[in-house]
Length: 368
View 1 (cartoon, helix red, strand yellow):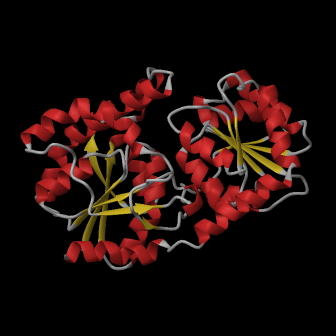
View 2: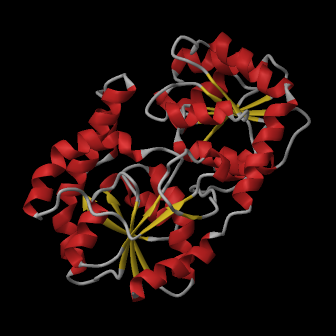
View 3: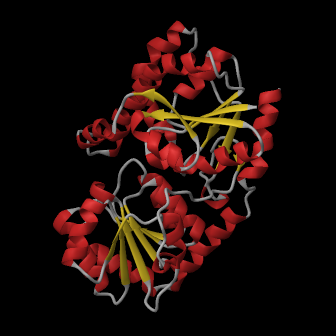
């Protein structure tokens, strides 16, 4: 079987599809993973074969992110348009690839509309693998503004439905009315680096990890947050690009900062502070770590559901200052109920079928 994975347009989508793609390859099948130019090193870095479908670079993505509307609805519409534009742009390179390496099945991410279009053109089955707990339907209004002419040309009134849906959400967090899907255990995956013992060993103090990069925490704000959290008597670890991390280490020698594989670090943490990113959220869930979510963006519905389930605190738009973050962090550390609920959700995830057991569903699709 030849399986083509087209996860999406950010590194997080690559990492969350890696476990299944690797399981398919380890079962003896041929696997390619397609992505925009920015993602090719990430695909190669997790040991898969990268195929470029668009020349979009990291610089292009940063420019788009900087110009996104601030309101969740406007941001979702803008993102949907861009995802659809990439899907349309990628049709030609995908078909050129298929002329030489024709896949038997296509596995796409929920916002990568090119997977459904390619499967329709080649008359092959497709699967949709969720990469987080998000509801991708929020992107459809913007996407359809771009996709409508393409669908009309194909004689379609809507995007073709996948032949199989695969979901990684803990069952108790799945919303009512969610589409029927085969469950799969989420397995955290990140680019790696030579490990130091402190990265995988718990110290004497509780550990708080702050991540999210420039989307939330930057410059003086990050400095104040790190200093405030350290004042709680905890060890602070900041997962950040080296340019940011070097300044933090110089200003706050007691804080550990740098590129740290979150799948290694998360099991040693007592709280993870982040921006609502799907991959960070799923990694924290799988490792049973309470979360402090410090921004409301397109993921706000899913993050609120987690907070209502008792495994996180979600701060609203007027609660983004460091004093609010530090106070919420203190509550998560001081109230055992958050840790207990997070561990219950981790047990739900651990009870789901591992990726190796899902490979058979894809082979069944491919062989018809």
